[in-house]
Amino acid sequence: MIPIHPSNIKMAEQYCQYAIKLLHDRTPYDREVFQTGVAAHYILEVLGKKANQLERQLLPDEINQTISDTCQELITKSREYDGVPEPPIPLLNIHEAKQITTAWAHRNPLPHDAFYEMPFALNKDWKQVEYNSTDAIFQTIIDMVHYFVDDNGVRTVIVRDYKSSWYITGQLDNLQRKAQAMVAWMKFNPEKIITEVTSIRTGQVLSREIWVQGNSQQLNEWADFIKMSAIALSNPDKLRAQPGPNCFQCPYAHSCKYVTGHANQAKHVVHKYVAALAVAKGLEKDVKSITKESPVQQGNTTVGYVAKESKSLANGATIDFLNVALEAGWDIYHFLDFINITRTQAEKIYRELPKDAREKLNHLFTTNTNTRFGVHK
Ligand code: SF4
Image 1 (spheres, rainbow, N blue to C red):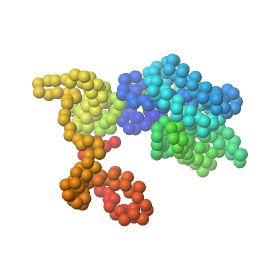
Image 2: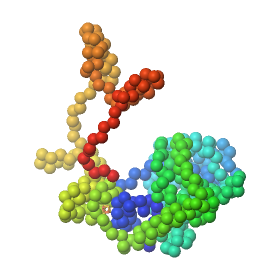
Image 3: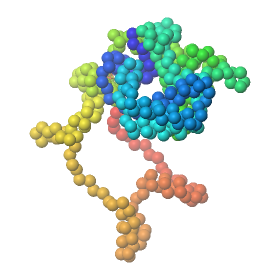
């Protein structure tokens, strides 16, 4: 049995079950890890645990000192996630994480009685077990969980997920949030659950209140779905490959034997095409890196980067052209016959204009629908 995380369920839905088998077998895959986010999460965990240890909120100097010490630790110590060693975080990312967490932590004091990076695991009978238990079929770690009784006597739990992106959207209804609400519900038996997604970069917060009374059916449905998925996915011997258009953008497309077979043998030509494209896309990053310095050549075919001329105009050329045209006796409207402003430029001008002037231009912003060929995901 392998413990399943909410992200694994999402991966199985997006690609196929066999991707979870490849993940479990530790098949290398191209994973974009945003290292600033990794460092920022760790800094916030240390800050929260420090507040817990002192049994009070941290003072401004303590926040600065703790962040400084943690960054030093990140530079010098190796880390791991679920027993798997993580690559060192580049210094620039640590520096950026230091800046954003410092600004955020001073504005958002962390409670001294919350759980930070709270591990949670369930067995096949849906009973809570130790996070690293061999019986665990579901595992998750939540950035912050704060259980308290509010001023109105309501037993409340806040489940917080930190994001380091500039703008967060559409995060309140995804599987991760449902899993976090389920965990908070099972562990604390609260009356109210608040799921929260916070951008530590901008301070933007998305939150949703779930009153358990009145939503228990919904919570049970989420729990049933997660349990069913975890049971199905936690047995690696039963994970079946389902090659097809879903292979597109699968992180294992460059090494999965089923997608290459599908690219050669699928009866449906569209399936064949998408499978071949998935493999090609999966290999593209490596091919670009290999051919960066020296392109690969066969006959008159070159794979890699080749120099191509591209023509452009110097910055500020419009003004020079206008001045020269006016000097040559052109009327400005004649000049404008040759110039077309883009939609983006028009929007910028529009935003700068007074409201009554903008109203005269509203009808010029039109939206058309075009069809585009490709694989859309
Ligand atoms: S490449 Fe296709 S068949 Fe292979 S794991 Fe990914 S989705 Fe499944």
